Length: 250
Ligand SMILES: [Zn+2]
Image (cartoon, rainbow, N blue to C red; front, side):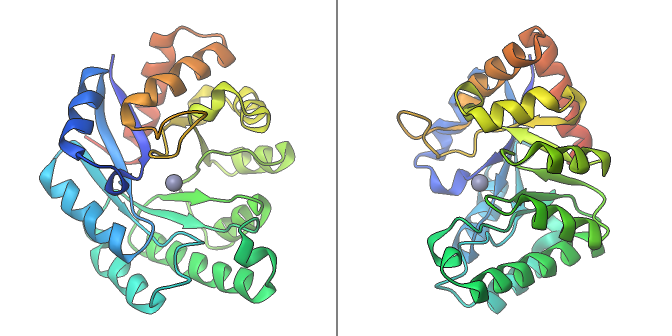
C-alpha cells in the first residue's frame, strides 16, 4: 500500500527524521509539506532538501499567519521560490479567526493576500492548497475568478451547496483524521466522489489526543474508506493516484 500525505506542517514537528521513518513504516511514499509564514516557508524548503523525493514543498502565507510579519517580504519569498515547489499553500481565508471576526479590514487584507498568491500559482502553473474556514464561498469564488485550474480545499467542512459548485469547477477536497468524528467534514466526504478526494493529516493538529504526525494518515484513510464503503486498499489506491496527478509527482 502506498499513501501520500497531501498537507502536513512538517516544519512544526520535532525530530523530523524519526517522523519520516514512522511515516515510511505505515506505507507513506511522499509528504507534501506546507508553509504558512516566512519562517515555516524557509524551513519547509530546507526539509525538502533533507528528504529529497520524499518531502515535497508547498509555499504560501496562511490567512492568519501574516499579522505579525512583513507580508511583502513573505510574499516575495513565495514568489521567488515557487519554481522549487509542487504547490502554493497553505493560502486562503479564515473569517472565524479572532482578528478577522472583529475587523472587515483584516478580512479585506486576507482576500488581497490570497488573490496575490492565487496569481503567483496561476502564473507559475502550480496547484493551490486552500484553507477556507468560515469563508468557503469567498475562497471558491476568488479561485474561480482568478482562473485557477487545480485547487484542493483542504479539510473541507463547509456548506454542501458550495461543495457541489467546487466539484463542478473541477476542484478537490481533502480529508483529515477529523473524518472520524466531525459531522460537517464527514458530510462533505460522503458527498464528494472518491476521485475528487485527497487525504492528509494537517499535522501537528491534534484530533482528540496528542499532536498528529504523517503516520496518522492511516486514521484518515480508515475513516474515509468506511464512509465511502470501499476497502482500505481501494481508498489508498484512488487517493494516492489523485495526489500524484494533482501535484504532478512522477
Ligand atoms: Zn494546514
